[in-house]
Length: 412
View 1 (tube, one colour):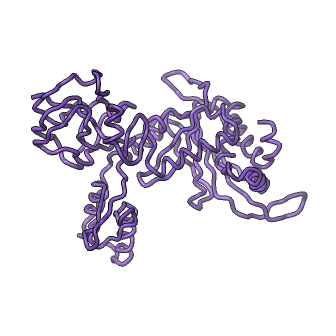
View 2: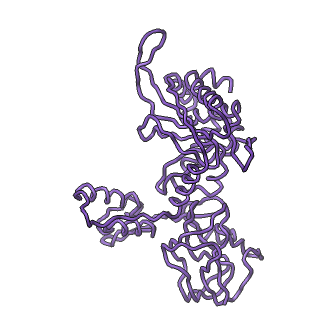
View 3: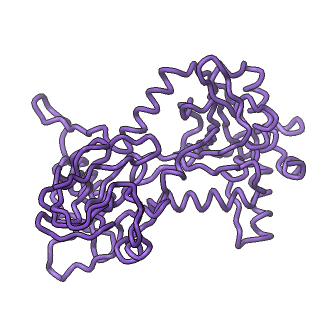
């Protein structure tokens, strides 16, 4: 009886966590039928079988992490074909692929790139029934933190309990729990999935990149007024402040291309295209969606692309291709109410621009102290690719654009 192995997931991914099994031992399956839902560092996806037959064994339980090439299921075959070989009426066996017919009928919920899917369908909960939990990860999170799901009110469709509901319940419990005493149980959070990938990338950045940070305060009063005027002219296609800073960043990278680079061995590779990443906080954690070829987009085009990527990130619809290939990152940590931060560079990039909160401060204008809207901008950069003159020049250029936005946008 052949064993179906966890296929190559692409994008350098080497392992995946079992979220839930979609088939039972003894069940008859068909070619391209999804048999298990797994979560990688990039997305949650369903894995289709490359052959038909009867499931005789499942290898692994929910919450277990499997390496690429490890057995998934054993099947008493009735229509075996080699993984990766496409035959009539069937599809590629790699994650997220299948026949168009089966994708239409079997896949459901949020969709990512290349047909990947993340389960998020409304489920009706009968009156008086126990609250529903779709995600095994939410159940595991509740179990690890000692939260009784029977006491949690779900905010999802039909009363489905989401991670945010468990976190809210956990926060309420924590608020009344006394300070930990010696002997109290510690809580362990496994580094796996997205959290593990982010941790490894941040550690690599700190280990390999000799970074330095420069910062400047910018009067963005005019930028706020310009944005309001732009959006008033076309309210159906709004432009965010992040989009305007992204536009200035792209222009700055054209003038200072050394910051759009990476170090490979004994060489600095100055990249021709600008693929702009921006940090986004989601329920799954911190992700960096990428707007590819950002230097070819207009201001509104860039705003629309950023808006679409942000919405997809919040809905969990980003695929691996939407999260890779960045050459420079913008981080708007001002949304968290902080002024500045020495952000960690998104390895293997060479720099990251940080945007602090915008607050009213006393500012000297024409010899008089007046209240102005001020924002702190920071740039963390790889000191191997450039010196302070280049980094300071880039940051000053972005700040000047923010202080004189109409003149800047007219020339960009």
